[in-house]
Image (cartoon, rainbow, N blue to C red; front, side, top):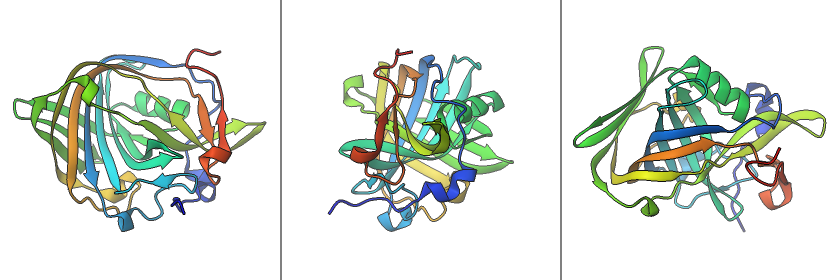
Length: 256
């Protein structure tokens, strides 16, 4: 029997981001610097974090991600995100648990356009010769301090970034309702490096993931890419398996 998550997001609808519509315009985001650290986590510590429509990854892992956007419609900003490794049917996905943006404008737009579970705070992305570091502070408290240690060059074809899923309220069939929204950026690689993840501080509760515990590091990457935040193409019923509950909103990224 396939395993499913246990989170019923319809019971927490009031706390979810709310989209005015599912027709947000895409953002083109050139020359972004991305740091992603994959960390194994005990599956018991992920209980209650994954929606019922999705499958847990085996073994369980999380993605600690930082992206420094040099250009965007709201100006430069840095985004930090915690995603839980999972699957939508047979497809690997990263379910968003929490996010922090370095600007109020970015946080507002990402929440209102794509449904990110996001706040604004102090987010830093710093490169040194032997490591790439990411830190996040909220209300003066460090909630994440991590690094990619001893980065070594690799080909961009050796790096795989999986699509994201977030939970939000949005209008569909004349009714605003909780749903899962797929966010599927594309990437053109200019530079890629791989190294060992290192985490000094991780405050799970500050990332909407109380009880989550980090275990063994898996792998880390740091890349420079052209990327985007695309138009929404797929949404999913949060309570049904995705093969039953997926709705296509548009055929392609460019459809009006």
